[in-house]
Amino acid sequence: MKLLNNRLRSFERGYLAFLMIAMTTTCFSLPVTQDRENPIAIVIHGGAGTINRELMSDEMEKKYREVLKEAIDSGYQILKNDGSSTDAIIATITILEDSPLFNAGHGAVFNHDGNIELDASIMQGSDLNAGAVAAVSRVKNPITLALAVLEHSPHVMLVGEGAEMFAKQQGIPLVPNQYFKTERRRLQLEEILAKEKGVSLTKTPPNPLLAAYRFDEKKLGTVGAVAIDKNGDIAAGTSTGGMTNKRFGRVGDVPVIGAGTYADNNSCGISATGHGEYFIRAAVAHDICARMEYKGISLQQAQDEVVQDKLVKMNGSGGVIGVDKDANVAFSFNSLGMYRASINKDGVRQIKIFKDD
Image 1 (tube, rainbow, N blue to C red):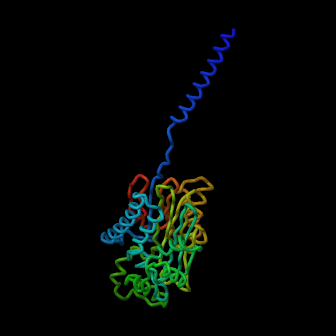
Image 2: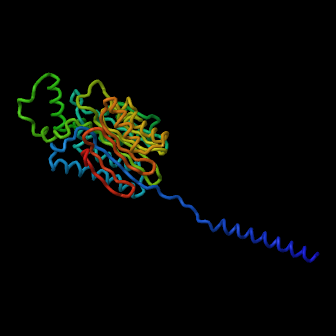
Image 3: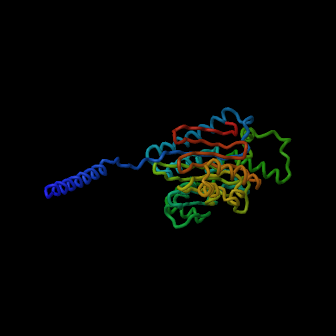
């Protein structure tokens, strides 16, 4: 019996040792889960409105598509090279601001006094930090100043001369207001002022330059971009010259965080373009992100609920672009067209202008 007990105790000790070795081996042989890179994506816009295909020449359409391609490719290349979504947004919008085709930076619309006033904003979804500027008239690329407000000030929005003093302090290039002015935009202002005075221009020969741009004379001009990088961080930015013939220091939705721009890693990033007063009242950009997070709906559905229903009921026109936390891209607009481009998480590029593209 004693011998049997000894054997049992020996077996138990051996079995326990086997279990410990087996458990240890099992624990250390499990595959190590590594952090996976998030898929990248980027989407941009150059404004929405009455963009008439029949009135746009092939040459003009080509110009717009070429700039949209340059801008989207620039931002996507930064993302591919492991750059941040913020850097991609800045690079993309800077190209659009530098183009005379869009209502932002060089080529922005004139205010009532014949000058240019610019607005811009940027927001990071990782920490909900944001920066914005409004009514600046000498900052070459307002989106870079918006970023400086985000990164180097305790504030969210700076305006006018104060914003330009800050730009000078930060070493951001300043240019004469004349730099932003183009003949096309000057003629647009003159036409509007003449109509206000009751002067009919129908008897005079149409200006060839204005005639060349009749396809989008009612376009609601803004430029914007939204991107998600390999870390899953979303950033959104928007820049504009506002409305032609604006007066009294009017500022639209673009620099208003939650109206023209919003980003949250928990849901999505949005950049808007349209009649700013309605976008402010509807808190469009934030509302789309909130609907995604609280209702659990898709980015496309959230955009459509706000743009195609809520805004339409208010008589507000325009559109939005966005990227969600899973790198899905989406557009929604209630106008005849929107200059837009995207490169989705599969690396597929799309460039579109008209509603039926």
